[in-house]
Image (tube, rainbow, N blue to C red):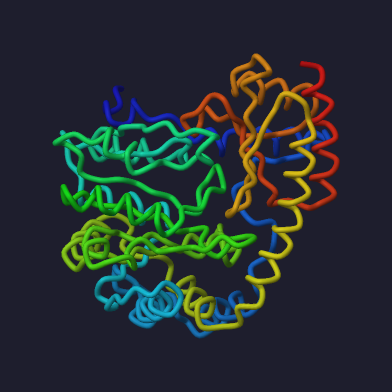
Length: 387
């Protein structure tokens, strides 16, 4: 029996595949140091869990509106105003089963066959496949370590064609940890505004910022930026709620309405009790976010300092998220070969840059304990020296 051409062109997420392989090795009794995880190793804060439990115990288990609970959409709108300086009505907010679904819904609502979507590389692994599923064509723009893995406005302009419909920009960035400045974003918006190109602004890591870096929401820059931007965010990273599958987008009214229609015919809405947890996350105690960020910062500094002392590899210190992108191009291996050999010979799991559109690099996550980081980097360093 044949599958569709659409499905045939998809490949499973390499990040999830590496993580699954590492977990399988652990289940066999092997001592594996996993640097592949894209999720916090912290538990969801208690007050969020309590809200979901209370919802379940009170029988709050029925359908909700497809766009999400009114009180959650209002809480998101309040958060965007308070934290990001962007004013959205609750009707412009759509709550989805994770930020990943919000991204996909936004692309489906705005892109069609023949359109092109510009994506800076290294990129989060799912962006190009989401674009292809919508029938559009991803246009990959390579960035450089010299520019801190950030796309410049002129790079964007050079990649544009009359078919360009959207730019996907992820800041803070997965996998590089790069954070775009206000001026860098303003220059990119200026280019997009000239041709009315949508900007899909994935801001899922906004709460994980370090040193003197500042997160700037693209939609806050100007009315032109606001009218073109679809802001994506969620609860997975900031609130350690990856398994809860809760995210959202905020967009111009027409886009939000289209996304609502799409979602109503696919997943309908996120789980009812999970949405109550989302309300508690936004309205409750924010101290767990601060505590988690401070711990990530300690791990970030340790990992970066260790990596930069290893010969023949380089890295840019990340300003956000919880990853370090390591340039291994001097070692003479592709990123996939490097990751495979590192896992089989040293029991250390990293994600090859091929998954992110750049075969020169591998990604290490510091969303794991400092003890595992120390042990894993000892093995990583010994392995690199054998090359």
